[in-house]
Amino acid sequence: MLYTSKTTRQTGFTLVELLIVVIILAILAAIVVPQFSATTDDARQSAFDSNLASLRAVAELYRQQHGAYPGNVAATAAVCPTGANQTGAAGTASFPLQLVNFTNSSGQACTGFDATQFRFGPYLKEGIPENPLGTSNTVTVVSTGVLGLSTGSTGGWRFDSITGEIIGDQ
Image 1 (cartoon, rainbow, N blue to C red):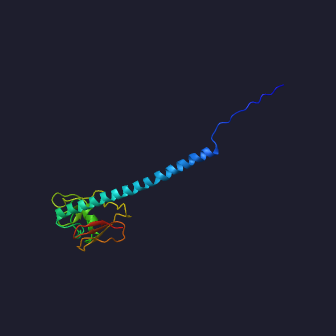
Image 2: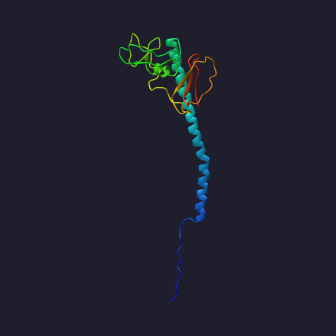
């Protein structure tokens, strides 16, 4: 009796072929991943520029309507016919109140609109925007009157109520 040997061929990938594919994928990932992290930084910088421009624009509009920058005068108590009065001392306390509420010509702030008294604003409906390069949306108001603000360490914004200069405070 004659036996014929029947050889069967197994199909599949060898270990060397799989390693080559994995190495190629790792090289491609090493090239692509840093480009995505740079995109995140670019987006953060773009958001910072946009928020800074927005704050500068509303501060200038406020100055044109009131004759002084926000935060330069206190948001003193007022009689609000259609809302609640908002009170804050001149500087850091009054800056957000004067930008997110209705105001009168002297800088008093009210939560409600009144066509005869509180007809200006609100300049920012969503509140003070966050500093994307920092950690908060707080605004530190200074009154040095000198261009070229130096940064502090609040992570928010820094505003000079005399010159109108605003910078990111990191």
